[in-house]
Length: 282
Ligand SMILES: C[S@@+](CC[C@H](N)C(=O)[O-])C[C@H]1O[C@@H](n2cnc3c(N)ncnc32)[C@H](O)[C@@H]1O
Image (tube, rainbow, N blue to C red):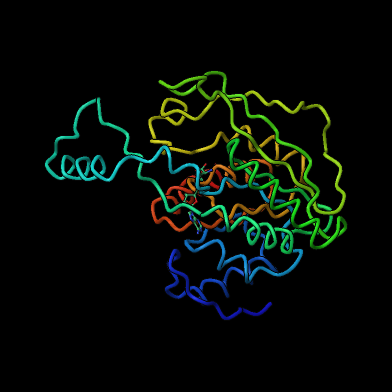
């Protein structure tokens, strides 16, 4: 497998990307190493992944409607100032919600086209999202079918509901769920038909992580494990191009799959790698 020339993008660190990608593509081709996480822009990285080389995608993209939860610039500034002055010590440290660059909804058609291309024939794709974004993904899938015909486009199956048990705080009809859009390329049966379209699973909390801060959008490993176990087999390669703190990777390794993850954020990549190393060492 050869490395491919990359174009640089605004959002991704591209320093020595070609060198790192040469390594990654060799890894994809021959390695039995279980996991690789790269700090890079997902769109740039997807472009150089060979056709039909990924067995399953499970991802939680930085979709635009997350913007509404982001803290104001003034609050972020105050937080940074207080942090510098050592005022954030103690038990009541406020959670700062300025977390990562957002992907505009207009990029979903491009993203789905790349997902479709890199996915193996007869494979599945799961995308975490909210109500609003699931409509955007549905519209992008419908457009794909119109442009390419049903045989060469994703089959939109459904919105799976992740039932978190209880809602967030302080607003009307508080959300106690998220969606996971379930897409299919070709035809692949689930390994188990035991699950309904509503999957109960507690959200990730500091307590459940032995005190590590889960960040604002970390997903539960056990929920992702259900998806991986249903839609792949041991040794398959699972991709999460927006891997955050590595929940998909951890679930993949527990299930004896290989994992390839990307993220633009240094901290997310560091935490992912630490978590994956811990699973490998266990
Ligand atoms: C919703 S979070 C994913 C959280 C993840 N599910 C977890 O359990 O930690 C989206 C992630 O996408 C990353 N991101 C944003 N833009 C990106 C891009 N262009 N390429 C790769 N990663 C990106 C962010 O840094 C963030 O970690």
